[in-house]
Image (cartoon, rainbow, N blue to C red; front, side, top):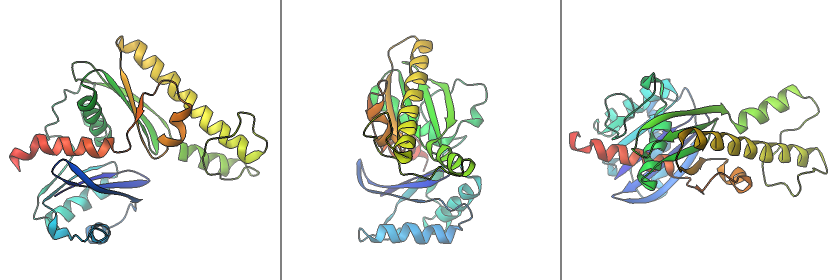
Length: 257
């Protein structure tokens, strides 16, 4: 059994694979200063919901954008999985040439998204990940990672709006009934949903034009389901894109494990 763990700034997404089947997946809040033992306790409790233990896990692969937690997950794999695991980063095979100026700066979650999107499409593609930031990652028809775009995410924008505008509340994001909000909450929801949908359509349109070839766009991340229905440039949503990318990267390195 393989654990695929995507550690984001806000949430951690954990998937449990048996061969090619995703048995279960969970999201939980990322705690930046959690220790390896604390992380193991969380993982073990989630596995327990399926009647499993950490001892039932054969290996794990982790992508982390939080450096302190990358180290702690390494400790978790060493202590609880007999070292059978890997962190996505330099030295791992991905099967994808990285055509950017500073490959070491590429986030492991972005790389996993690009690998999974290309494997799924088999041609030029764009992965849009609605996380703490909104990441746009572009892959050529030849399977080369070309680069992308990073913009502030929805959560950041909502927090900034509530913090800097005393009379504006923090609202939950859901599809607005109308573009013209009939109250403050509806007005904010309309601004966020249609504003970010417009951003996505605008950026993806520019990326497709610059790429110069047809490119399938796949969205993932926590807010994708709320924003994508209002987008015109996104072809599909796959909430498991990153986890599947991690699994693919593990498989491309498993002969060395």
